[in-house]
Image (cartoon, rainbow, N blue to C red; front, top):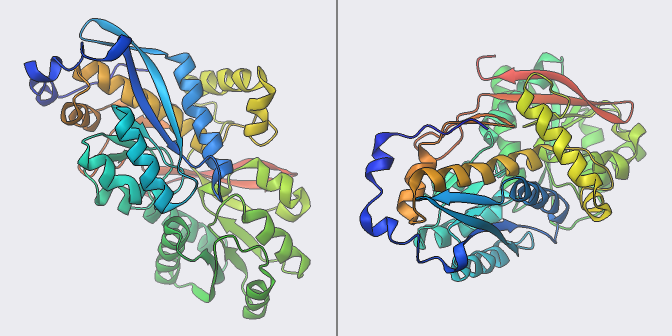
Length: 393
């Protein structure tokens, strides 16, 4: 990973009082909070994401601050895929004395926990939480992924370019990620001249989608855009095909996960298109090649890791993003020379580093300056790179 470049402003922020906080840390240990859904609807994705941080911690177990080496310890909490539980989990991290936080998989819990981290002046970096409200409403929240407005526009442009003029959307009520991404897709698709022929919604933990899928079938939709969780994806796909719906199925980054193909069936998923932050088959960067090789070796060294990854050694995008988030925090700690929250926040804001998901810098809101996404299609039971799309397109 390339050395981070920081502005002179950050260096000036290293006051004597801030530096004094470093030697006070017990037993030369620094805690980074891992704020993820390990259970609940998003438990599968959250568990995978947590493993990205765990691997990063094994690769880089220490940081050097003001000449002293400190062991980095991950303090993991389960936000249970729930906004209320998320606030409780965030409060625990604050009381545990973490200096920074990684997470969460799921925008809703990240938005809910933001005020808790901000009040404690603890910087948080989201790996894959893509809703704009995560950072816009919290000055202490950053993220290393692209946002839903971009992702929604990319998928809408793809659908229109493929010749689909009538699209149905399916979204989860009360889920910030699902509703947000669906709305951005609809806005862009209609602006291009396409028609949203029906927009269906479902409840959290719903398992029977046949009623709304019957409406989709009757609408004459040529394609379906259904951003949702890993848990609901196979159910939607299987039930759509059981009803004889042959429309193209599209979704966002959460569906770039081989467990969906395994659970829905390769035949049912054939031709499914998703946007994603990362493609393990990308060989254009040595950083990516080395990361994929190392992570697969780490997964295969322990069968429980394979199980938590969905039963295989595929490298999904949120894992790579979480790996990057961990390293951004470590780089910022070393550059700031302190664990003081305000100084660390300033150091993160000034980051410029090459991650496995691309070059990472942040804008004034705390969003990563990323302008491209991968689009993958399921072919012969596997995700296959289709194209890379940038903002300029």
